[in-house]
Image 1 (cartoon, one colour):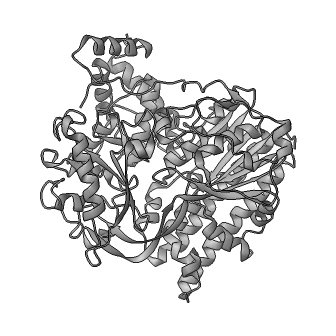
Image 2 (cartoon, one colour):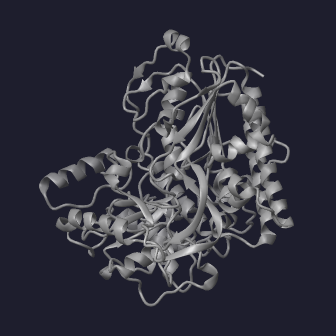
Image 3 (cartoon, chains in turn blue, yellow):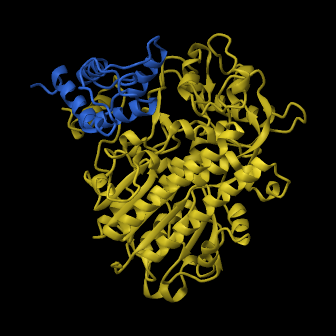
Length: 99
Length: 538
């Protein structure tokens, strides 16, 4: 499976979350529709740390601060796993450019 | 208990100052610390500019200035070219830490509750980072099975040990009087958790260098300064205030006991170093620096934004993202991104977005802004300057990694932090004093070869790492900014243990950050390709 495919990305992200969800007392499955703030009860800082875990996995930077700032401006301020996968996929496809 | 043949313990007391500790020792609230100091040496430890926790602790563990190690703040720009800010992590530290320096000389290192140690570097020993929420503490600790072992500790509780970001806000925002007691008890319980972990690991996983930071001092002093400051503590307190003060004293007494236990476990042949990242003192006023910049024409908010009455004394520490989102970039040439940095960013076109002043204008613009800050940012009643000093980033930080640092850094006349929030006024006296950072922290050293009963001249925080390494018999890396403070050690020890200079530090073994932005010229493109190849992208 191509490392940059959304399926593979979902697999990697859900693996990170699954490794800890028991500690978080979340018994549901991690699906593309799982929301970080509503379902997993994340605070903003948790989304930041998840971002750093993803960067560690891919061994490269992602513009997470910009992404999270954008989420903060939306009416519905939550992130579904599928949104995160899409963000990662889009950034893996391109070189890091000046914002 | 097996004592290692050479062992050093580093105990960090975040925000400790002799202003408070001396009184606590005299009052009998920290008897062991008093006894320890009498058998070793003490001195004022000068922090970095500004005296702030993340860059200061990073300076302690790298022996380098912020411009060399790359950490300036809790939050800093995602990359030199981004205007978005993020929490710093280990990936942002540009210099090797003492943990792996010690490892490379065949010794083990244990690191507990240091900010910026996530994701954790692989070490011979262990790492549990500070400033990580409970959800991520296990995942961000090293080795992977460490938390499985820690669950053997009676009463171990990850949630209680980790930082509770919502509660920590109260340190600088304040809280209702009915909340003080629970809030202080939260920090007492939290410190007990870190002590239990250290106690357990010192027994089961002894290291040559074992280090821990107790950071409840910082939080408690922020909120409860008026109950601890000798100048204020003597005034008659209301019953609830006396209860708060007694809880604060309980905290310090317990920390004193932790220090006693740790020193006892380390054994008589160990060297003990106690340091703080910065000191503490009172703050009585607030400078709303972005409001002042707006009134001077340097900044424009989007729309008419005014804080609520309840938030009028907030600094914007809890909502830096919100402040940046509210800026009109087309009409902003200078702004403060975070309260904690006391820093001002000059918006240069092409650097963090298209908007801003022309690059050619940068130096004259900066010089003019510096002069205005020092001469025109004044107390509206007395006309006295509110800003005692302004540093350029070259002056404040030095080093090669200052691209993410503020262009200007301010020292306020009462040493407080700025507020980045919009306000109806640019200056306000606080309704009650709170604690704030000061440059003068503490340094204590005890152990073999260390002077007894000596008061040292003020020493720099970048000299802690070299002095620690020397105590372990490790050569000092040639590229550390700091050096061994020979006054700590007695002459006989120095003669029989000459200070050696060693090879430079090695680059941290992980990616170094975002590739540089695209440039049009061939040389720039070639550099980018080389960089991308080295990072494994192509």
